[in-house]
Image (cartoon, rainbow, N blue to C red; front, side):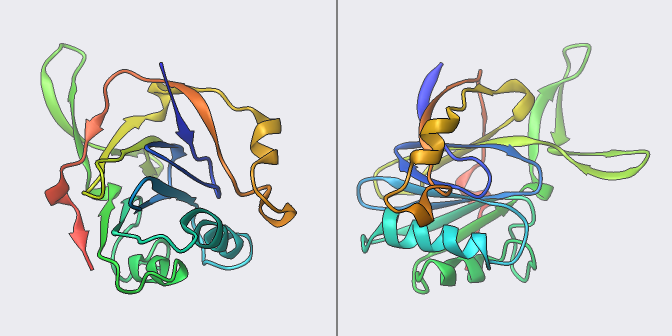
Length: 204
């Protein structure tokens, strides 16, 4: 069991270790600052309304003028020309137009597993079934490595347990506008995780 900043849907938070639970169509946006990571759990959709307030909160309250060394995105549909999680649009929303931005689409992600007979196999992180294409629910983790590229890994959400303190979650934020956008440290339990190699990320 570990305690880390756990960032739920349409919320943001900062810390040396971040977790983004229950990602089935979402994208984890990770900003590398001199002394911390700032994370945004972006759900599907255009950056407007609540999502615009979320990105403004991350930019103005959490980044707050600090240097952003790089932006790392990991999630479903995180790709160039994406209408769902465009790296260029996300970078612009954070006013980080000149910051190196890296992205990784989970639809291309594979993990090493063992089948029912214990034989090692490489499987996609999504599944196809009789009714069509179904995304697999993942939890994304990010660990700070100074200002270098953070360690990014995933684990199936069914293998991760975490606590949610609703009252503390609601109270997080410095103004009433942001109280529904912040995150808190939570206890989280998981065994192992699957590292996404740095060379698997693309850059814009």
